[in-house]
Amino acid sequence: MIQRPSLEQLDRIARAYGLGLGPEDLIEFRNLVSAALASYDRVHDMVEPKPPVTYSRSVGYRPGEEENPLGAWYWKTKVPGASEGKLSGKRIVLKDNVSLAGVPMMNGTSVLEGYVPDVDATIVTRILDAGGEIVGKAVCEHLCFSGSSFTSDTGPVRNPHDPSRSAGGSSSGSAVLVATGDVDMAIGGDQGGSIRIPSSWCGVYGLKPTYGLVPYTGVFPIEQTIDHVGPIAGTVADVALLLEVIAGPDGLDPRQRDLEAKPYSQLLGGDLSGMRIGVVREGFGWEALSEPDVDEAVREAAHAFVQYGASVEEISIPMHRDGLHIWNVIGTEGTLDMMIRGHSQGTNWKGFYQTSLLDVYARGLKTRAVDLTDTVKMVILAAQYMQEMYHGRYYAKAQNLGRQLRAEYDAVLKTYDVLIMPTTPMKATPIPGPESSREERVARALEMIVNTAPFDVTGHPAMNVPCGRSGGLPVGMMLIGRHGEDEVVLRAAYAFEQDRGQI
Image (cartoon, helix red, strand yellow):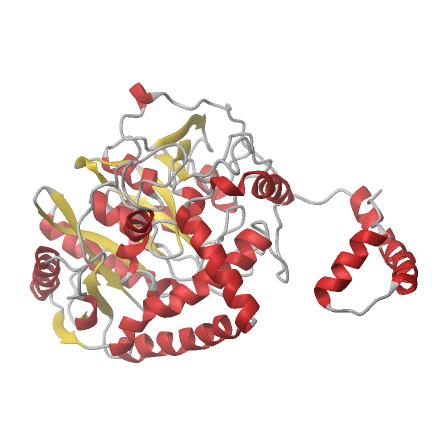
């Protein structure tokens, strides 16, 4: 039976909302509220439906340092899938914000440590149905809120090309384990660039699919309008194959509309005759961020598409420079509503709510909020202030501007099939030391998202393609396509990969 409120509790709520209730009013309302809670009693007694868990698995273990020199593994296990299928023989690791029933999930934060999901995410079931083997969980950044790789409460994830540098985030462990060959494929999540950034800094391929193409069901969210999940792999063909398996509606995720999966792995070949590519001027030359060798490598790689039959032109999309500001407002106040006040599930959407996750995370926030990272604390403070002062006006305005931003890209994509710019304006940055200031840590966590974040707002497919190295560190080129035309982006990436080989 649901506990009934006291008069003191109702008085506090009434005062907070300015309801103007006196002592006698509160007594009457307590009776009314208590009667209304009878429905809660009945719902409490009922059994909620959950997606079935259909494959046996071992719990596994958390590996020690000797098995985990770069800090990329959170958990190792073995979950074999069907005896045959498109992913037979493939070893896949999940970003540790993806629910795998019976296996711990931390999402990079001690607030959630000890939680064990009781369901498989939709993409997990699809991977297993296709014959893939899930071999563990990869470390991700603290609540996935960092583009660098030093914020997880398990410790920093180190770049395989230079362990003193960041692997990129927030799908940090996923990209590292692909780069080192520990796995064939990985699942990443992307709200501000978190598939593409670590793929860029680790030198692997990572695709943020069109918004809603891949179901987010069973994955820890940040903000519903910018949440994406997608593949990371060592080759374009493997990215396409994994996308082919996990894409398509599941009937449980409100982010999804009418996008159906395509046979992406079969659509890669052929030259690019007739393809038009636009090199976006505003993606280069970010003041105090862009490194000349990165800009030069991406421009040179972009013009190589002429050899494959495409035409290449430099174009201008001035509003691209405002994309980060629009994302910041949506990501700040939307995160507060969904991830903090909504305890990871929120309200006002139809689909599968992961109540076991909500319970554990809500209690963790109440008892261990002091352990949240500086970046998350900053977001909470800024978002709550703006909500109290402006009541969500700027979140609403940013969402409206997000439609305009999408329209700006769409207008250009009527002429051009693919857009190109650097994935990140700089190569992998050094991991801040223990003596670093709070300002430095926050800057290192978010400075690299200027080109990636706008496409989380607009939902266009965007892919990192390794295009060179400088000083021993990978440089990433980002390819962007039309909504629902992920295969065009993959085909362009494949042509470049076949010409340049392993970079």
